[in-house]
Amino acid sequence: MDAPTIKSKFLTTNNELGLVAVGFSGGQCKPGVDAAPMALIESGLVEQLRDDLEYAIHYDGQVHAYTELMPAADPDHRGMKNPRAVSAVTEQLSKQVYAHAKEGRFVLTLGGDHSIAIGTISGTAKAIRERLGPGREMAVIWVDAHADINTPETSESGNIHGMPVAFLTGLAREKAGEPFGWIGEDQRVSVKKLVYIGLRDVDRGEKKILREHGIKAFSMHDVDRHGIGKVMDMALGWIGRDTPIHLSFDIDALDPMWAPSTGTAVRGGLTLREGDFIAECVHETGSLVALDLVEVNPSLEEQGAAETVRAGVSIVRCALGDTLL
Ligand SMILES: NC(=[NH2+])NCCC[C@H](N)C(=O)O
Ligand SMILES: [Mn+2]
Ligand SMILES: [Mn+2]
Image (cartoon, rainbow, N blue to C red; front, side):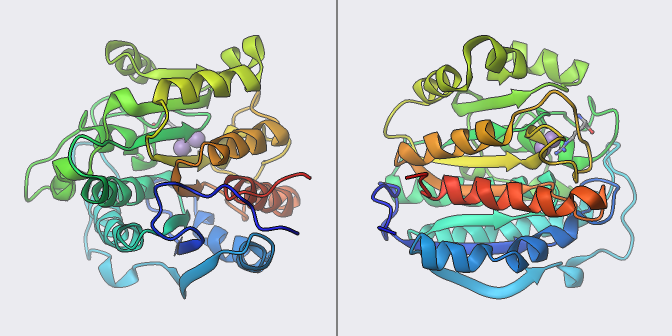
């Protein structure tokens, strides 16, 4: 197979990829999502990226569980569960992702629950700001059944995987000394540069936030009305050309028919092809600088675990330039 021709114009090295495997589940309550990176890697993802898609892969060979960072005690804070654990993991992950992005590598992070995006997006946002200079902001495409934009106060669950976007946009903030006080201005992204695709289970408080801040969101209703092709044109049009893109893909954006093994499955989702198509379109922009794949939980719906892993591998391949022909 020929090497893919489009790789990101924002990377200094056109085929180098930093891979971070994050075996962390503390942003929600169900064990098992920490096993996803190993399951994805065991299914041959790394070899496929190296041999089929011709990336030079920088990977430390570890699934990070960050056990050395786990606090002895972690009482709730502003209603958040495991705040210090999630904070410690995401702060460390942010440095790892930043180090890859700073070298001009594409950064692929395999989660883990979606709280880890606090680490990944803060890391790329900082590196991109430094590399492109002031005034150049990164965009985020968040593909998910959920908006994950609860503040600690609006959240009904206290699970931090439902809050990463609030911390990353500064809608939720903490002071120095509080768990998420480490997130600095240079690590945040603008609500104007955020686009959602696939939403269908958004909490009441989140809907209010989306409305009040004019956040661009394409729900499943929009996908049904316009088709995924038009939705992608609109989503990418909103972001504009020449803006680096971080794609954060929650596998629960897909319908449980294709991805049943995930902690908060919601019916009425994207088909496998629609998910792959989103990833293909984002790749085609030539602006993709990082990808997260999160919320695969091989221990749930064991019948469907292999299929869910396969769906995850497919999304990653498409985002990294795999083509059908
Ligand atoms: N990353 C996810 N799967 N998030 C699900 C979030 C569900 C719900 N909105 C909450 O705040 O708890
Ligand atoms: Mn979700
Ligand atoms: Mn999510």
